[in-house]
Image 1 (cartoon, rainbow, N blue to C red):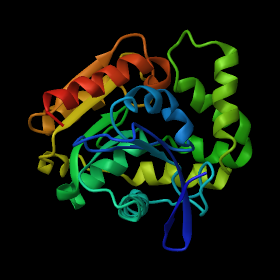
Image 2: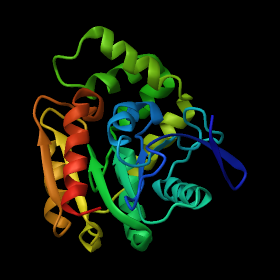
Image 3: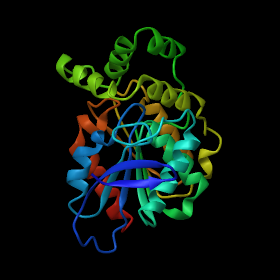
Image 4: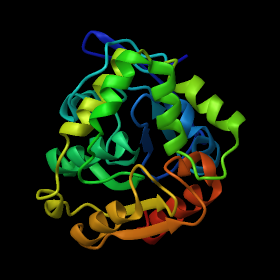
Length: 258
């Protein structure tokens, strides 16, 4: 399994792509709160047909070392160091939910290192309801089940919701809480308009956690950005409508000749 050394922490990642990807910049995918690289498996397979695609486990998640963080900027800096450790330059960054917050912060901090970004199911501000923090301490399983139910479209099966909850519970509760505190403290509502990077914003019509109005705000504030709203999909649009997500990203990059 491949790892990159980031300071004193080994960061796990998976990679797909042709041996010779030509001039196409690589894609780096960043998961959301309590997640791992596993949420990007469909995109690794499809987008990896033409170019290098990398999905990492943030510190404390999946198979990466570390204890997680409670500030988006800490994760942002870890991603910067991860990309540098792999010797990548001018990457396309794709972020879901908290991962979208991370790459917004990244685009403001060092836009010259990026070729483009894709924001999926995210917002410029990500408030978390206070009862979620209490619930994680008092009844973690029930609280995670509630969060994963909010993450899917209304017609999601009980079996699928159980799989989602089981997957999130592989992440330590302390790390999940730190992620949510990082999201709750995140607010770029005023700064987001300074982003000039080529940007696509994507969300599902049935997203309860980061509803379409969040995506529409990002689209209005980021000059020249493109917006795709995918029908019959919730917050986990990357898993619910993987083909539509991959096709949207590919079309966006083709229009950029990127």
